[in-house]
Image 1 (cartoon, rainbow, N blue to C red):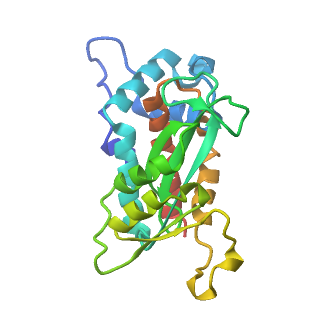
Image 2: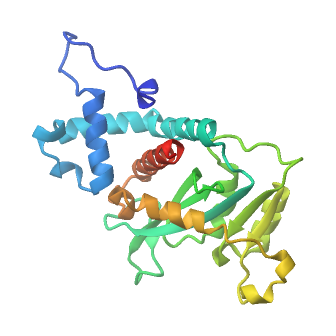
Length: 256
């Protein structure tokens, strides 16, 4: 029902021109691709209609921003149901293979230089995704940290009267990031290279909180279209990331 709010209406019966696939049929086909990671041409016409028609509709919806709007709509829904836990936030990324290449791919230094992409996410204290960026697998995490902080899908509330904490692993160990986060009124908790937990004074330690972003990245891996990037167009893959994150938010918001 919430997706219907942002979709164009179905083509009315008896309208001049070729009959169009119903929106529900298109959504079912996109969910199948998102979950299974199958290629468009492998879809049978008897399942969801012609794959070319399905792909054309997907491209039209992506260009009109349907999936980004859905992501924002579900963040707002999650906020109404659970309240966004801005107090603790975490950032992380996940590298995935990109066998077909395309823009925003690069040689993955952790996978023998094979082509790959990264998805970068910012989550709240429960692990709800609030911002998503994509890049080539060769990109350093720190180059996208500030982008994530500045691209939350809903505005971040003023932090004058409340401290917001930001967690990150050693991949974000950079004074530039710390300075940028401080300027945005974050209290930064980024692991330092060469420093173990036992070396940190007990009064400065906090309970483990960064694990929620790793759990969300694991949830996203349940969508096989995100586990391997088959889309040459980065905008198409970003749209699938928005779609999957909207589904994660729905599950988190409706879970008792």
